[in-house]
Amino acid sequence: MFEFYDERLGGPVGLLKVTDARANFAEILKSEKKLVITRHGRPTKILVDYDEYLALLEKAGGKNANWEKSKEKAVA
Image (tube, rainbow, N blue to C red; front, side, top):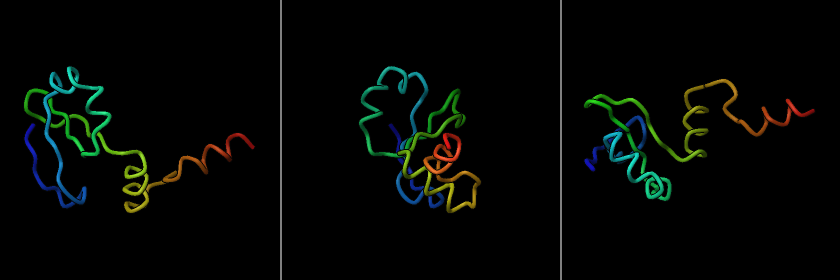
């Protein structure tokens, strides 16, 4: 796995081919690293911790940044 620094994601990010990600998915889920998954050398997906994803959404001003609050409204 190749690693690089991404200022937008706030730190080091791993770069992984989709075939390697598929073969090591259980281990990847245990990892604390942010990962960019590539297909044919192009980024296709990013894997980050859920809480970190919510923080990034909130920072970007995204709607429904807090899924738990959205879920509570839907149930009520």
